[in-house]
Length: 68
Image (cartoon, rainbow, N blue to C red; front, side, top):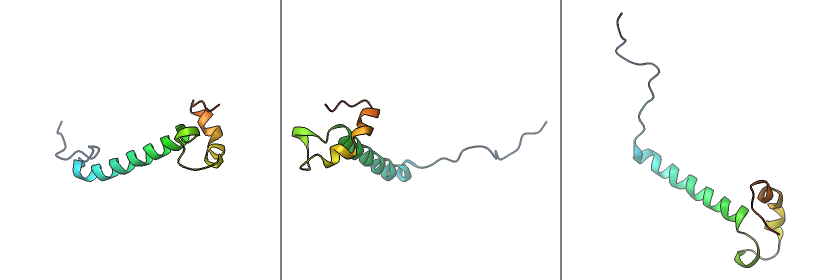
């Protein structure tokens, strides 16, 4: 049996410098989403009123964040 010189199913290596900007962007989006779903209410609110809280209310409970 002969082994092929090139592996057709081998994954290509991606340099870390190419992944880093996307990882930072994804982490920032995750942090903003976590803030709005988990923290945006009451004394720590950045926005006045309960519009953001009301909009995200069901998602907050679905993810296990208590809000009242």
